[in-house]
Image (cartoon, rainbow, N blue to C red; front, side, top):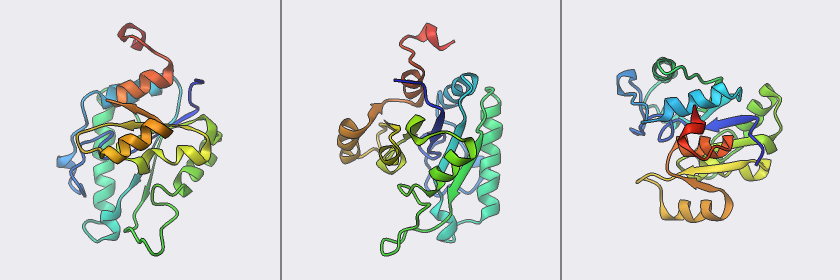
Length: 188
């Protein structure tokens, strides 16, 4: 597989612990190995873009200021390992089954915007997340999806990914596959 031209990451459950509607910077916990994996993507010269659903804003659980403070904390934590995010896109809307928002994953509006901003074709995009909605946008773009299998991942999501994407145990494993690395020595 060709190295990706852009890597899309989900935030909660992929980069940080998913605490459901996180609104306090002090609650940010970067997942083990996530910062190092992101730093490896950075060193490869590939843009790292977060696309995240943040319905807590639309539901009134927290405001845009709290959301931004959490993002600032994430950036500061990643920076300790030499990692950075090149852009962060979020959907602030609450889910509406009757009238779905085009920017709420699995909608593709935010991915479209990022692909335009970074001038990368969707076929060269990698999509990593812990839910099908995070990686299923790979299909319409012709990109590659990597489902991060966690204890919270449903059996249905794993079955889907085994057919349509790839399953991985960690963000580091996804990065190994993206970069074509097969052993620990090659990660340096």
